[in-house]
Every structure is written in C-alpha cells, then in structure tokens.
Length: 282
Image (tube, rainbow, N blue to C red; front, side):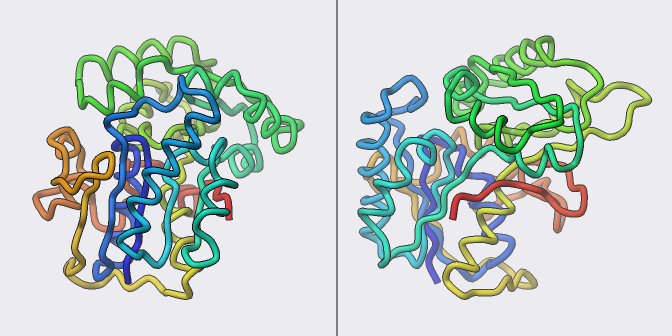
C-alpha cells in the first residue's frame, strides 16, 4: 500500500504521522512545494497550478490514494486535482472542521490564515453549519510561516497575537490550517482559561487519514513496528525530510527517530472529545 500526501509545506506532517500510526506498513510519499510557498497569498488559479504540479509529482510514484493535506489547496484546487487524477487515484481533501465543532455547541473560534478567514468560502461554511452557534473567525498572520520555519520565537509570538484576538469563554477551536496542528498544544496552552472546562481543538489529520483508508478499502492495522518507506519530494525533487520537519514530533516519527507522541495520541496533540472531530472533502 502506498499513500501520497501533498501540501505547500510541512502542514502534511500531521496527517502523515497519523497514517504512519494507522498503517505502519504503508509506504508514504510526501510532496510539498518549498519553491512556491506560501500558497495563501496566491490567486486561486495560481494555487491550482502549483497544487497540480505537486500532485503530479506524487502521482508519478503510483500511490493508491492522495491526501490533499492543505486547506488552501482543498478550497481552490480540489476539482482540478480530481479531474486530473481520478478515478485512478482517489483524492481526499481537507476543509475546516466547522460542522463538527458547531455541533458540539458554542462559542467556537476558527483559527486560520488571514486569506481563509476573510474568504467567502469560510463565511459560507459558517452560514451553513454554524447557525445558532456563536462562531468567530480569528486571523493568524505569520503562524503558518513560523511553523514552516520551525521558528520557536515566531511561533510563540504569532500564537500570543492570535490568542489576544480570540474571545474568552470558548468551548472549542477549529484549526483551519494544517500547519497549526503541529503546534496544537501550544495553542491550547495560550487559550485555556484557569478553572474553565477543557478546550476542545478540532483538526483534520485523523479524519483525512481514516478516509483515505476507507477510499481504498483498507483497515487500520496499527499494532506493528513501522516497515513502510517514506519518500520526500520538494517541488518535484527527491529529497530527505527538511530539517525544520524534525523540530516536530510528527516529523521525527516519520524519520524513524525519537518522538514524544504518546502511543495512540492524535498527531499535533489535538484534543479528543470521543475522538478527534474533523472535516473531510470526499
């Protein structure tokens, strides 16, 4: 079995780490675009062109499925990716988990890039799934870039700035960028109020990995040491995992080195209610 994952950068690590835990025997192809990132400021047409190039690089390795582990690419390029690759390669997209978060009750905050926060797409999701629940979009300028660079100071500064813009008394927070799942516990620490109920974080990694297995008719088989290979493509070039990826537990897990991810814990540390809730574009 071979599963490909694509993103502009290291945001794909969370879903890849979950897939590694669910199917340690699966070969993984990690395809990203360091030459073209960030994708957020690009036009939809430009995002689509870059996403297609990254996806085709991964498709050349003949995966059984492709996970689009990127909110921006899922919003703008998913129809084009499916037209180019399906039915030969199932394509699984990612969207902000507004629906399950709102179903759990409010107030809810959505942490996302400034472009996503102000997009008609996010406003439509809130209108469709957030009715009757207080939902606040919180732009997080610089956070995805700081995570991509594994810049500890910049990560802390971006989280603190976004936390200052976030209403108090939240029930849950939607992580609307896959990069944010890599620093989920730091986000929780910045937002959790003393004496308040535990804040629930909604990510996408668990759901998209599980959906990829369903699409190819495979079952989780986690009780084994990893045997699958990990191939890395950087703007189409074969490479090793970038040094920045190894700053995160998910990257170290994929590299086969030490990890501080507890067995069975969700990648990125996103909180469970009865399991990590997330949104998947099938």
